[in-house]
Structure formats: structure tokens, C-alpha cells
Amino acid sequence: GENVEQHPSTLSVQEGDSAVIKCTYSDSASNYFPWYKQELGKGPQLIIDIRSNVGEKKDQRIAVTLNKTAKHFSLHITETQPEDSAVYFCAASPSNDYKLSFGAGTTVTVRA
Amino acid sequence: DAGVTQSPTHLIKTRGQQVTLRCSPKSGHDTVSWYQQALGQGPQFIFQYYEEEERQRGNFPDRFSGHQFPNYSSELNVNALLLGDSALYLCASSPGGLNTEAFFGQGTRLTVV
Image (cartoon, rainbow over all chains, first blue to last red; front, side, top):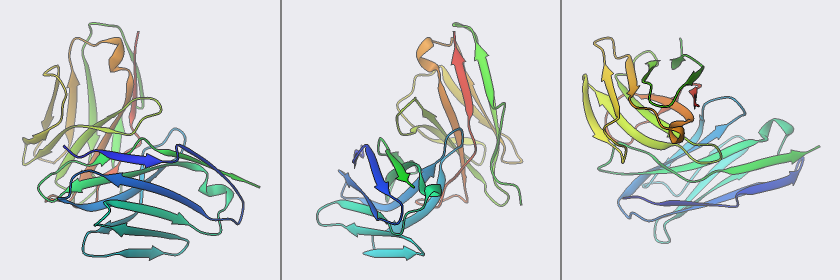
């Protein structure tokens, strides 16, 4: 099955700086890659996703890039704000699979 | 438009007991998936229900079972609870099909003592 690895496990950035989280996946059939943000005591919230026919997608301060050849994808948050502090999860899903396989998460702390 | 709702939010059970968790999907969604999230880890897929049938199952024992009702709401049942079943149980709804956007509820925090 699909195996997703996520790095780093923790990330501390100064407010206004950028944050980058990287994930690798194992199944070359994976074609859907969502990112979730989970705040304390809440369920994961979908913040952006990308499909394998696209190399990059941007939504305001958030962008995701995908390298199918290397089987890795990344989340970029620019101009970080204190409300960006949360745990972020990447996930992947093969074209013939209904489930999402998640990474272990990255705890992002934005220092004021 | 209500999002995904789960009940209860917290639950404490004794080892060996049985538990039922409930989920109402987002309006317009007909597919419900259940995930288990242990502390400090990513969610792990338990199973998915579509058209009142279990469509796909993850690597969980038969103690975990589910049901989907005609109104698309769903239940997760866990029998013979173990201490290791303590976790956040998440329900995700989606519009069906492969690789569609999944929206999660706030989860049910289950503690087994």
C-alpha cells in the first residue's frame, strides 16, 4: 500500500517568514494529494489539494508543488501569521483507492 | 450548510465494553469514511461506506464494524474495547467516487480505561 513520509516533524518560524513542509510517497499510481491543517481539539481541515496532472497550485499565501518523477510534494506557506500555528498533514491517494494515506504530521509554530 | 457532525465529542469506556460513534455527512455528500488518529500520529483509514455498503476496509480487526443509513449518516461500532483503542475517531464525508475532496468532522475522543 501507499506509504507517505513527512518532514520535518516540527517547524518553528518567525512571523512573516515562509514555512515549507515536504512529503514523499511510495505508490507511483497516486494521483491525488491533499493537505490538511489540524488545530488543537479539532478535526483536520482541507486547505489545498493538487492532482497529478498539475505541477503547482496556489491559493493566496499557500502553495503546493508536485514532482511526480521524484514522488514528492511540498506545502509552502508565505508571510506566516500566528493563526498558521497548527499541525499540518499531507496525504496521498492512488487512482484506484478510496482511502487517504497520511503522513505523520508537522507541528508548525509561528513566533510573534 | 452544516458540515460534518460527529457525536459524542468525548467518551470514556471500560476495557471489554462496546461503543457506537455517529456521523452525519456534509450536505450533498453520499460517502462516509472513518479514520482512527492516535495521539501524535496521522489518521489511519478504518473503512468507507457508500450506498449503505462497506466499499473499502483498512487494516483493522473485525471488532471494528460500521453501518450507513439511507440518509447517508453512519455509525462506527467497536466491540471488546482494548486500551489501545483510545484515540480520536474521525469521520470524513465526500461526494463519492475516487480521489474526491474529503471533509472531516471534529472527531470523537474515545478513552478506554
